[in-house]
Image (cartoon, each protein chain N blue to C red):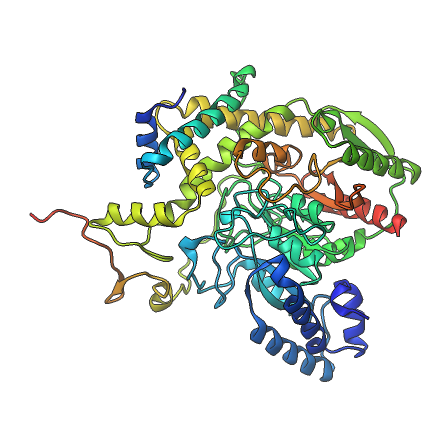
Length: 97
Length: 477
C-alpha cells in the first residue's frame, strides 16, 4: 500500500472531511489503485522540462485600480446559512479565555 | 411541423417571417419536456413561467418590428454550474441545493443580449466531476437514444436536453471532455473552445486552468451562432484572451480542399470499440474524397495524459472547493465549533466522487508529495502541449475519436473510478494543451448508438474546426 492509515487521516483533515470506519478500507484501496496508475509518469525524464500551469502564454494581466460598484451587502449575504447585523455568522472559533 | 425538433437558425427564419410566435415555440418545447422529462431527467430545474414571460416579450418586439438576433426567442438549457441571477444554481450538489446566484455569469449576460429563452438548468455530474452524469447529487439522466445507457458527462443533461428536443441548444462546460463526450454519446454537436476564448466568470470553478464553457447544438451552424454570442474578452476573467473574435458563421463553408488532416495513431489504440474505429476511419476517408489530405501523426505522450489530468484537475478542485464550508452560501450542518461544522457539512453533502477528487488533490499537493505528483504532472503537461505544437507544424487539423466507446450502460462503470477516468483518453489532452475541439456525429453502431468524431484545432482556430465540421455535415445531408 502506498497510502497508509496515517496518510488518509492527514489528507482527510486537510480536506475537512471525515472518513470513518467502514468507508476507510474502500477509500484507501481506491487511492492506492489510483496512485499506482499515475506512477507511469515516472517513466518520463522531465529534468529539463518546465512546468505548464496555464495553456495560454499570459502573465501580469493589469488593469487600472479604479473603484467600481460591487454587490450590495444584503445581496452578498442573501445565500448565507446564518447572518447577523450584516455579517456571516459562524460557530465559536476561539476557546473561551 | 414539430418546432422543438428544429435548429435555431431554421426557427429564426420562421420567427422573423411571423410564421410562428416565440410563445408557440416555447410552449412546444415545454410540452416536449412534459412528455419526456420523466424518462430522460435532463433538467434539475425548469423555469416555465419566466420562459413564457420572456417569450411574450419577444413576440411584442417582433410585432413592433424590432430586429431579432438568430438566438432571439430560441429555447435553451443552461448547465447548472453556470450562474443565473435569481435562478437556482446547484452544480448538482446537495451542498448548493438552495444557492440562488445574485449575479449572472458573463456568458449569460452575453446570451441575454441575444434574448434566447432559458427553459431550465441542466443536470450534470456533481461539480462537473464525472463522465456519465451518474454523479449528480439529485438524479441520473438517461441517454435519449437508449434509456438504459448514460448520456455521458459531465454535461449529460445539456446534451440529453438537445438530443431529446427538450431544448434547441444548450451551454455546457468542458474540463476534460465534458462537452464533447456527452455530445458524442447523444448524437449532437458539442464544442470546447480554446482556453480563454470564452469568459469563465460565473462558471462555478472545478479546475480553473482547464475549464471552458461551450455550445451543445443540433448542427454546426447553430454551434457557430452560439459561439458568436458567448466568445470574447471579459475584464472579470483575467484568463480570457483579448484576441479579436471573428464572425464564426463566415466559416460555415463546405470546402476542405487543401486541408491537411492528421490522424494520431495513439488515439486509435487497443481497447477502442471496433465499430467506433470503423466509423471514424470512414469519416476520414470521406474528407479525403472531398479534397483533404490525410496524414498519420504521432502524439507520443498521449498515454500519460490521464495521469497528468487526474493529478492537475483534482489539485485545482481541492483548492476551488474549499469555499464550500457552510459559511457564506449553501447548506450548513452545525457542529460544536467551526471546524466541526465544516467537516459535518462537507462530509454529509459532497458526493463520493467529489470527496475522492478533493482527497487526491490534497494528497498530490501535500508536503512530501508535491514534486512527485503535482509538479511532475505540470511538466508532463508541457510535453503533451509540445506534442500538439509539433503536430500542427505539418497538419491543419487533427481528427480523432471523441470517446473510445459508444455510450455505456448506467451502473456499468460507476464502481470502478479508474476505469471511468480512462474513458477520457481522447478528450483530456486538449484541455491540458488549451486547444479547441468539436465533436460531431458520424454514424451509429449496429444497435443504433450514436458515434461522434472529434476535430482538434490550433489555439484560437475555431474557424477551421467549424469549416471542417460543416463540410462533413453538409456533404452527408
